Image (tube, rainbow, N blue to C red; front, side, top):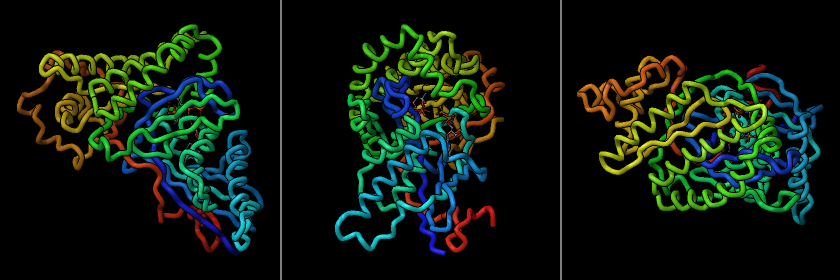
Length: 402
Ligand SMILES: Nc1ncnc2c1ncn2[C@@H]1O[C@H](COP(=O)(O)OP(=O)(O)OP(=O)(O)O)[C@@H](O)[C@H]1O
Ligand SMILES: C[C@@](O)(CCOP(=O)(O)OP(=O)(O)O)CC(=O)O
């Protein structure tokens, strides 16, 4: 039995300028451009193997060892596009010898090393990994931006995970979506010292999916039109500039404002959508308190929060301020899992010497009741090739099944 396989890993990305709203639900065309930071795959990643063989009787997808349907409208579109590009390769001159992979069924085996559908951008990592693994299997010559248009059809935010570092998704104008693609603003190496502390407020499946939440907002929120027409276009340019200039003050301010603006349109939807909970709000207050102190001391904002369609907080900061920020959060959350001694030398931190940016009275210790886990991570690269296949080439089956 001949089995062709390819394996990749792909990252999560967390938007600093949020995608919220579609102008075309079938093609996943957004109502505004967005910006994100790609996070390191050492901490959060999808590992996906793709295979095709004449022996496969249907397309199958195993996600975290469970068989999932591949007959969803989005996956049908994604596969159709990828097969079309493979056919083009097979039909081009000089390639007559290539196997006709476009005519074979696929087996996809994928694993996320973090909770799926819990507001940790699993769809972005998952769909970008799926598209990248099949592109590798098909040996497609197309650019990452081209491939990002296919990932976009799988899940909008997935298009941004094809690049590392700092990424824009340009909304485009065309009705066929051919200009709605991800592009790199700056690579990881440009601003490598951006770190992220993720506070997992809830790892449960969320109540209102992004897909249906944004549809309700588009239909019912009055604020929404103001956001996409009067706020985002200018913010998009300003945020790109702040990244290119490594201006953390500006980047942080715009990131926090945009998270708040997006959640305002959720609240302005009818009926309202609540993604933030009371712990999220306490974290917001604490971040502003830290920044107020820091601005008083040296004029600098040192940490930014952002929240996706759920209560989890992602805090961005520069490595040089890590001690100051983690000292506060470690003091509150030392009993929560996720503090990695290799990344954060908490035993030697300055708080033990009494050098906290906040006094004990200013710290809201109740935050610890709502946090189940912390993840310490940082900006990272785009999808990577991997040798760690989840499919056994000899049998053509998922490795976990043998
Ligand atoms: N590794 C994967 N391979 C293929 N599909 C995946 C993978 N991981 C997640 N998905 C798809 O993404 C869906 C989860 O997306 P959803 O938007 O509900 O949650 P999320 O991405 O974790 O949260 P958010 O996008 O709000 O941050 C899963 O039900 C599955 O269909
Ligand atoms: C709040 C967000 O995380 C929304 C992400 O929405 P999805 O990309 O999950 O939605 P679909 O395109 O319907 O799959 C903001 C963002 O990532 O930009």
